[in-house]
Length: 119
Image (tube, rainbow, N blue to C red; front, side, top):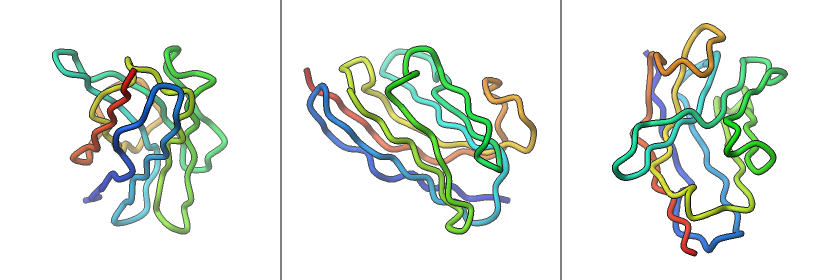
């Protein structure tokens, strides 16, 4: 079993930046970031494979968000720049063993970290 703990959320003005971290209790394979805004369904944001060589992004964040990982630290990051009010959501990291990044059937999930972007 893998435990995931997100951190780095907070309140930021539109146009600002944040870096989210997801610390895992052990080795991880495919890692994804999802988000859920109030009244909306959880949506895919980004994912990265074990090697870090394959990444995929939702169209809404492409060019503004960057996913990366440090396997020595069992940590995955989500660098977010040019934040918009519509990026406001709870951000979750998640783990899966196969490369089907947009499929929400990840096997382990963190509890989430709140990101609020003020306009």
